[in-house]
Amino acid sequence: MKFLLSLPLFALLSFSPNAKAQTAPVAAAQSAGLATAQFKTSAVCDMCKARIEKSLAYEKGVQSAVLDVPTKVLTVQYKADKTTPAALRTAVQKTGYDADELTADARAYNRLPDCCKKTNAVH
Ligand SMILES: [Cu+2]
Image (tube, rainbow, N blue to C red):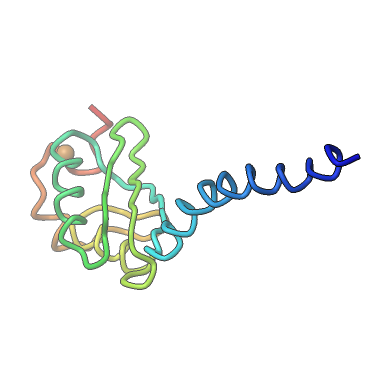
């Protein structure tokens, strides 16, 4: 009987440190306020990739920006209290590329090298 009574206590003692270890990283991610957004762009090559990633890296609140050339999808990790997906889309437009349904800023687009214009297929 004594053994049976001590079991739940033992279970509590041994499981609570584990529970803490599991929730800690989640809590840390939440307090940092990191969010992820993905945009379909009009990038066609590695030069576009470098241009967009560099441009987004200078945007306020951006943690990381990675463009996948074959799918043209830009994945941005950002601090949710510093910027918004709308602001990030605008940054992509100002770099000369489409972002989802938004069309590239015309002046920025015209400054792109010919090989980076969206009339070109992905290469
Ligand atoms: Cu390009």
